[in-house]
Length: 119
Image 1 (cartoon, helix red, strand yellow):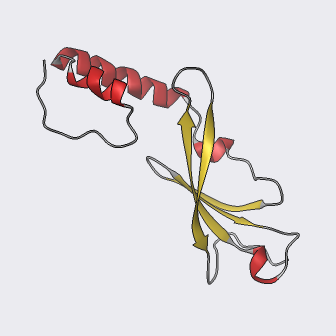
Image 2 (image 1 turned 45 degrees about the vertical axis):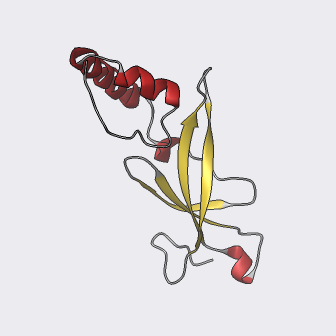
Image 3 (image 1 turned 180 degrees about the horizontal axis):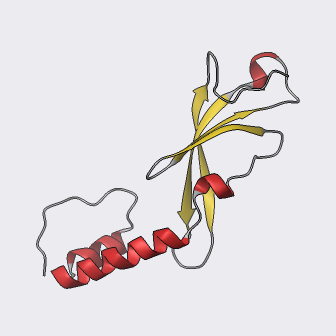
């Protein structure tokens, strides 16, 4: 069994952290291997994120743990049009299949946005 003083990330449920802490080194290796296979089976967020009602996607940039999304609101004018930046994460449901996209507002994007349209 592995002994650790490491604090688990806040996003890891306590039940999972407890199981990991009680696992042997070989079990942890198997868990890591399994988790990596699960990650490979999920499509990248850039392939699955869709614009929300009243918004158009301008740019998507995927990173390890999250995806940054820039949107505009074409039916709006002035500053209400955007562009606006969000950090989007897929949060799977713990006890069943599926999950939810969590959009965290980062702020208005100032200056040129790569991928901007001239309309």
